[in-house]
Length: 188
Image (cartoon, rainbow, N blue to C red; front, side, top):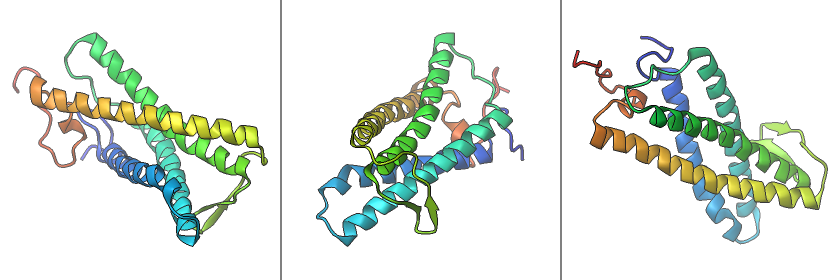
């Protein structure tokens, strides 16, 4: 088994990709509903879960970026240059947002003066002192980054499905675990 990304995304890249996808879906569901919860211990627990999952995404995103720098990306599939450039820009934006989202949430939490713990196990330092203006800015960045991330994720998934269903190439298969090996150009 090749752990690096040669003809397809290797198992480390696939695992990090799909784990981050699942965590982002959970974070979106929690984040879009937690503000409407009645005040009380349950709401505090949901906020703490959201924050812990966000810190987990931050750690996994850093690991994913480090792995990508080490293992590279699979060889590009044949296709128009503009598509490859657009895919590269989209990946870069997705990686950036996977860092901006949790970091802006961490700053938002710090500027509000709340403590931050990762699943109640590790107390994390504040990134800023209590500051209402910074809190509002971080909140705006966090929310706008979420909607941009959501848009890019939908476009990313739609592009993968388009390539799978209409172009018939291995764009999607290369990120699926246990999918058959990618087709070689020329039918080999």
